[in-house]
Image (cartoon, rainbow, N blue to C red):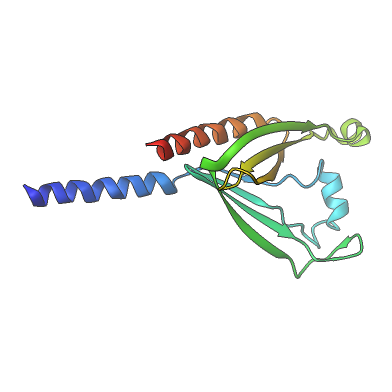
Length: 162
């Protein structure tokens, strides 16, 4: 009987670890408003731009930010550095969505959609410090992702309270 209970406890731990590491959403930074702007800025793909990537897990958000090497305003094709920031969702204070329309010419000539920026405010471990993270997404995707983040925040804060 004890061995059976030990197996059940072991399976519970595996299930909990699996749900903790399950990916809820994967996204990519929206760098350009239209394909023509993308072709112009990347020299038709010869100098590709690396967008930041976002991964929402059940209790944390992984933000991989790419910082390209530059010579003045010109972005280089190589020597990009990146950093990965894991945001614990139990410390999230606020999630806001802000829409940015495409520039007039891009909207009229290229039918370019806008961007949506999700601002995530995170209070520090002591409660005093506030940090912000920005996710830049396609138009229409921000509300859905903000809802997913808020659901994950509620779930992780509920787990912390228990």
